Length: 376
Image (cartoon, rainbow, N blue to C red; front, side):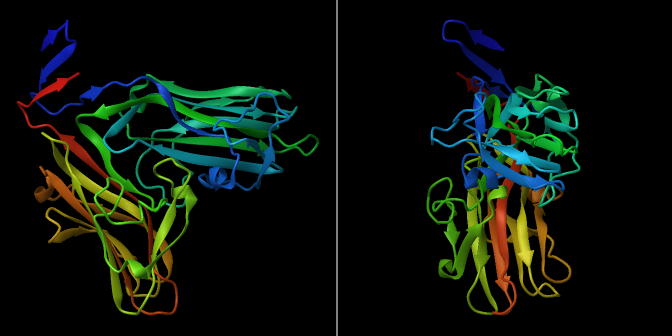
């Protein structure tokens, strides 16, 4: 390695596949002060309690994080609630030096507890995000009756650096009815967001949350083409928010029987690199037995031959994970581009229509051996 100190440029020759990143300063990656219905809808809510969102202006520990004049806490009457939010790094970025912070109030008894946790478990979560490995717990002080800052901070833990997503969970539990309800809020995720020059990253995401994400065009967030757009409707599905803007929807195939809608996207590798091990994931919904109404993810190396497809659901009406996995197909080892397609087929005009949501594509960014990379 040769380093020109005056110009502060590192010139690196890649002899084998490795992780090369350009560091960025730690910053607030995501915040949520529970002030609006869209901010509360992004969570997957678990447990046997019922969340109630209350004005937090009476507690000096709480403040308006986003400048909209609204901020609340989440309160639980009995049992427990768990608010789970997964933060997904933008395409071609990785996360590091992470911390999840919040406020909690135990309301005077150790039986009414608030705690927060983080998880680096990846893979499919679907509608049920509980049951994963959770780390770095921080909880309110037993017997306290004031708001306390909480921090779940993996920091330099190698398992939480160079990753493409992190999950957070706030637990508000109440087993005593003799005091007021415990509550929590003021959630923030901070950390480093860095450019990934190699390694496994998200290469494209679409949660249908904005008009751009529902449209075809040349923009990075657009689909390349959408067939029969007049036979597609969109409905809220906020907790599948994969771009952290508190907006997400699902796309539903409507219209005539025995017709198909296709969403197609061409994804291009960064200059001087290749894609490998491409995997597309999402949620789909079907109706009727024998695969007659369904949504499916498909991959192609050229946008013509679609040879990697997610499994079709077995049985009747259901919501299911869609996975189109190219890792065992040598055609997808070194690609300068890859094509993604959602196929939605509707067999009949009665019954439930097929829909798709939370579309994400991951891949290894591969740097050919001997490649010269300059990092400013």
